[in-house]
Image (tube, rainbow, N blue to C red; front, side, top):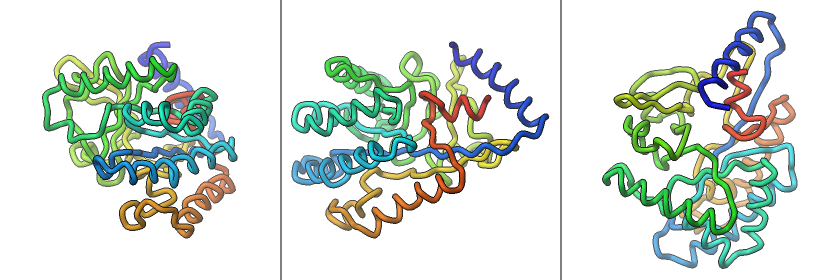
Length: 269
C-alpha cells in the first residue's frame, strides 16, 4: 500500500480512537546504532564489538520474543558477519526475517556523509544493497544518519531508496529547526518530500503514548564503549535490560518503526 494512502486511512482511524475515548495504547521502540569501525582499522575492537555486544544483544532479543527493535548497521558489517561470523549472521537474519528486528542500513561504512556530494551517498547505498542481495537479506526503507547528521536535502538524495528518515533524540537538528512536533511529519526539499520520524517528537498523543526503550550506540547497551574497551559491563547491561522489563510491566507493546505491527501504523491508526 502506498504511504500516502496508508497515512489517510490511519489518520481516520486515529481520529476515531480519540473521539471514542479508547484506552491509552503504549508503544516502546528501540534503535541500536552499530559501527564496526568505531575505532577505524582496529580489527581487535571490531571483533570485540561483535562478540561482546552485538551477538549478546541479538541473543537477548531471541530470548525475549515480545521485544522488538530497529538495528542500524553498516553494509560493510553485513559482509563481515556473513564471511567471518556465520553464527552471528545467522541469528541476525533469523530475527530480521521473523520481524522481531527491523534492519536499517544507510551506509556501506560510516562517515561524515553530509560533507560529500550526494553521489557519494548514493554509491554507498548501492554497495550496501549489492551486499544485501548477495546474502539474501532485506533492509527496511528507513534511513538513519548517525551522530545527529541531518540535512533538509534528504527528501532529494534519498528519493527512490528510502521512504522514512529518522532523526535522533532530544537534541536532534530536526527539532532545532522546527521545535516540538508530532513524531511523524514531512521534510520538503524543492518538489520532493520524505516522511520523517522525529525522535524527539511529542510522546503523549491523546490515546497513544510512546517512548524509547533504547536509542544510542548499540555498543552502549552492554558496554561503555571506549571507556570499557568494549568489554561487557554488568551494571550497564543490567540497567538496560531492566528497562525493557520495566516497560513491559507498565503495559508497553514493543514495536518496530515501520515493519510489522509498526509504530507508524500504530500511531496513525
